[in-house]
Amino acid sequence: MTRLMCVVAIVLLCVLAVFHEVTWAAGELYISCEGTKSNGGGLRTYQYTLVNRGSSSVTLTLFYLGTMDLSLQNYTNWTAPAGFTATVADWNTLFNLFQTSMMSTTMMKTPHGVIPIPVSFPTVGGICWSGSMTLAPNQTATFGFDNPYYPWDMEWFAEHPDAVNSSQGFPYLPIAGPTGIFTQGWVHGPGEFPVPTEQSTFGHIKALYRADS
Image (cartoon, rainbow, N blue to C red; front, side):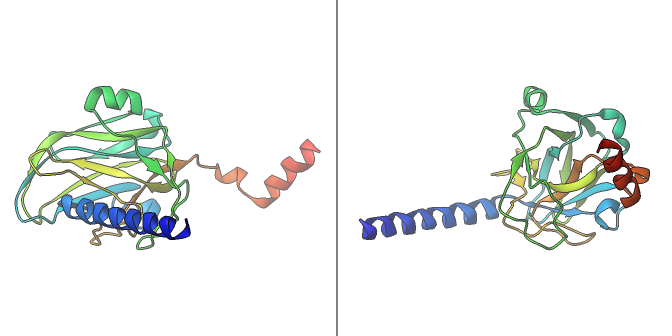
């Protein structure tokens, strides 16, 4: 029985290794996480640059990632290539509009270049840019916005239907960024609700505790 379990485990590991290798090779687009909330060197609090690492051009039609903030008024100063528009909504709405997949988060912020812990939770919704542009090899496209929420690690997806497979972020790779560092790891997106500065001091917390006692 023990020998059989060992054989099954080895087979499963081989299948997973092959799956990861094929998935890794499938996506031509890599990403850099550049937001100022991540000290990424960009202009927006959340900013992402995609680059085509493939040997031929691809047509980018969708780029989206998870978010925990569905309040559109919290998003300002949108940045995107010409012809792209942004939609912030729950996953049911985004699926009906663009046939998106649900994205996940670790519910924490992992530094650039570090592999996140192997846990993930579904996000309440997504930020989706839709449009069309051709990315030649080594050409880039930058997307971004300002948002007050604290950053968490977020899964992302970039659809380019003229390629064999689209590109996506993988949780077992280092977090992408900062500026100029491109990977296929996850990025940072709006996660935790921001605590007002005047309420984040230790003295204020102690005062609230005394008031509730």
